[in-house]
Every structure is written in C-alpha cells, then in structure tokens.
Amino acid sequence: MKHAISALAAATLLATATGACGQVARSTPGQPEARTALDLMPAKGKLTVTTPAFKDGGDIPFENTQYRGNVFPGLAWTKGPKGTKSYVLIMQDNSLLYKGAPILHWTMFNIPAGVTKLERGMTAPPAGAAYGPNYMGPAKPYTGPKTPPGPKDNYHFEIFAIDTTVPDEAGASYAALTKAMDGHVLASGEVVGQGQKDPQAK
Image (tube, rainbow, N blue to C red; front, side, top):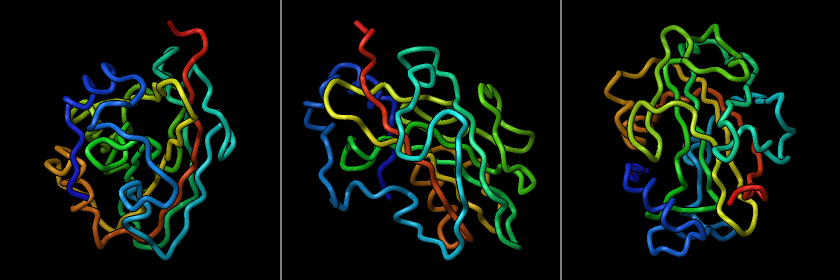
C-alpha cells in the first residue's frame, strides 16, 4: 500500500483515455496489484453499504460521473461494532491500475461514529470529518468516474469502521491514510458500481 496517487495521474489519465500509457494499465482478474484497501485490510466485522443511485454491481448513473455533473450519489451503511470511533471512506477503481495500484477517486476520514449516512449531492464533509487524497492530490472532494472507452470499470465505495481517529496529516496521501488505519479496522463493507464512457461525450 505504498502507492500514492499524485496530480500527475490526472494528467496521465486525461492524456491517455484508452489507458494505453505504460503507467496506466487494465487489470486482470485476480491480479494482486488490483487489491483494494478492503482487500488489504480485512476485518472480522461486516458493514452493509448501500446507495440510492444504483444496486450493488449495477451501472453508476452518468449524473454521478465527471461526464455529467459529478453529483455524489449518496451512501448509507450499517452501524459499526462497539468500540467504533470513526469511519473512513475510500473509493477506488481497480479495473485500471496507475503505477501498479487501483486508481484512487475519493477518500474521507474521521467521519463521526454517529454518522452512518451521506446524503446525495453532498458538497461538504460532516462536521469533524475531512476530505483525504485522491489521484489529483490531498483534500479533494468527490471525484466520480470518468471511465475511458472500452470495458466497464468497477468502482468500489468502501467504508471502514475504526477504533480510533486519524491525525490530519494522514490525509496527505493514500499511503499515510492506510498506515494510520492499519490495525484499527473493526468492520468494513462496500458497494460496487460499474462505470462506462458516456455515449454523449465527445
């Protein structure tokens, strides 16, 4: 989990919509490098994660993508187990790899333990929570899919219940955030949506 996604990735992805660049590659089933944060930090407890925008495994509406509006689809999850101090949200596309790791679309950390829902269209984190890094850098808001032409991509909206809060500096990079979470995950869950290129996009 040493792969931080930098602003360079944004330029790379925009310049190589087909993912043909050497730094961006399509993953293969079972490829170790395609493991998400949920895969790398397994937990005994399970959270059920849902969104009003699509069913698990279904297509993400284009309004929830960068093609049209980039509107946050909304998320809800079951309450974490006893000892939960906060939640962390991580959104990754593991169908495409950047520098050998899933592309990081969005993170939020220190979501209060009493919060188990983020409303559709949310534009600011709940009180006490903070945006973490994505492929464009630290402290970035929701950055939805912009799937290149070709097969659909899998976007994992992952929620982690942890027994601590993480320091602000953990939001500087994916590596720092996951290091702060490591060993503290009590329960986790995800909802997965499929993204595709908008047929109306030029």
